[in-house]
Amino acid sequence: MNVPILSLININKRISSKFKLSNINMDFYPGEVCGIIGENGSGKSSLMKIISGIYKPDSGIIEFESNHVEFPNVFESKKKGIYYVPQEINLFDNLTVAENIFIDVKSHLYAPYDIVKMNNIYHLTEEIFNELNVDIDPFMYVKDMELSKKQILSFVKAYISDAKFIIFDEPASTLTDLENDILFDIINKLKANNCSIVLISHKIDRIKKISDKIAVLKNGSIIKKGESKDYSSEKIIQVLSESKNPIKYPKLYFENDDVILSVENLNYKNILKSINFKLQKQEIIGIIGNSNSRKDTLISILFGLIKPDSGKIFLDGEKIEINHPSDAMLKGITLVPEDKIEFAIFNNFNLINNLSISSLKRFSKNQILDNYIMENVAENYIYKLRITPGNPEDKIIYYSGGNQQKVTFAKSIMQLAKIYLLDEPTRGIDVVSKNDVYNIINNLLISGSSVILFSTDFDEILGMCDRILVLSDGEIVALLDAHDTNKEELIYYLTL
Image 1 (cartoon, rainbow, N blue to C red):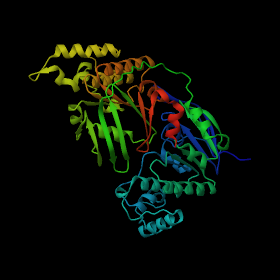
Image 2 (cartoon, rainbow, N blue to C red; image 1 turned 90 degrees about the vertical axis):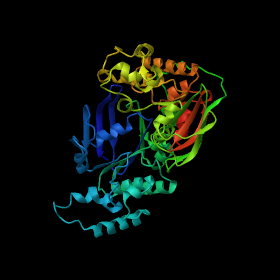
Image 3 (tube, one colour; image 1 turned 180 degrees about the vertical axis):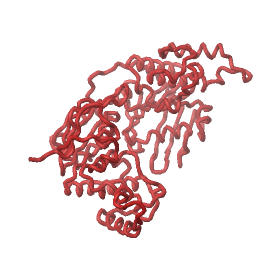
């Protein structure tokens, strides 16, 4: 009888005030590949972090090789034979390829102060690369490598780890088909050695091609699992697109054909490729992407945090250069960042100062602030967004996460900008507060502004946008009319 190498029994973990993993039960077997599929934020990576010792479950049991185990850290899980390849590249830029490959594996084989035979390491690296058909110079420094080569290097590290259980978390985000074949070759070799493999990917076809079993996660729970052969791509997309609690969105529509922003052939390294789109006045364009969409890079370019390698940006028909966020704001472009607490909140400022700090010119005359007008305008936004407690002298550090997010949103819209870049503006806030935010967005449109809404919430994108750009691995793979599409079509383009 085939015995699981690892079992998760009633695993529960509270990740945040709005999200938790609930009653996770799964068995993983030697010599099998289990593909895990789910939308962004479904809990895939969080579950893998529990297995690998990064997170500790609140309740439940982990059994490894039929023994009850607890992993206080990654080092302990790795000693047991569990190896985690995360989404983020985890290499040492100042070391060579060969040094990176063996730094985890060989370091514990040598006693302190023993001399590592570097010639042997480089020779072994060449042998491994020949075996796997990897074309990388072992003597190259990692800092000089392309992102896709760094990913392959991470796979090779897993391959030589002698692990019994290996997790690949979104491993093929920047790979060509040829490079993806290297990953699959590694997985098949590991499988032949009776290793158990978990493959997390938004690419359904790739999951089905290599996996023996699949599990579908949604909202922190496993909603489907079984043999891969029993699930067509169409069936998986249908499962992912089902909504239990649809929300009504207060969308307003405007017929305004004037183009306020044009982006032409924008490129950045090998990350963003030929980005083209137009934003009309009083329009909401939604941009939705997978976990490797590179939307953060696009936002950074539009807000002046980084410069593109090539391409043009036009505002009201005139070519503009955005070299700094101050340039963007002067031209009427403002940003509500995704990580609002780190990048948009001054914890020790009071509520009024937090709301008005980006709009001081609006309330000044001859370099003197009109505190009366500033406080009245700020209090108006406090009322509209239901920021609570909402007292002018409150320190934001003591506010709930949801209210801190509403403060950052109000701070940005007080700037009276032409274009608002909204990055996950409703993440982490309740349904009532979401509707408050949607109504404020509508007020921005009424006042003549335009919005680019970056969101991983399919229903939000469909409910609030006029047109939708699907961004996958740094490329726009579809431009859709929000009125004529649905969640299944969005998921289809994201899983190509």
